[in-house]
Figure 1 (spheres, one colour):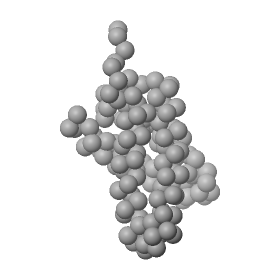
Figure 2 (tube, rainbow, N blue to C red):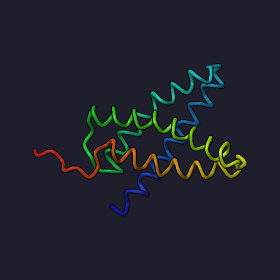
Figure 3 (cartoon, rainbow, N blue to C red):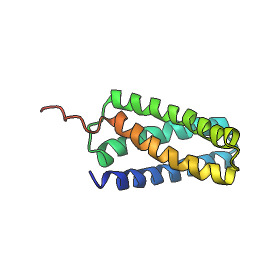
Length: 127
């Protein structure tokens, strides 16, 4: 279990690189940023789910797990926006402080979400 957070960060970093590569490439190809964001979501989220399930959490792939992971990924966008709003709006922090704090909170939130989504900690089905 002690390797799980490190593995999560490796997969997360790889997905972040892939996400940025797709966004930058799509922008250079003239794709609108909304379409580029949808393309990254459709590409990166299923890959992230599979990698986290198999390598990070040693869980079996399932459609239900993928659906939970997609829902969690969508919810993280909302949580990120609310976190920035709270830090910048309610607390009046400058973005230079709010962004790193929100990023730290999102790493923790997304780790918990991914663990829940892939069903880590549940007994594997009997063969």
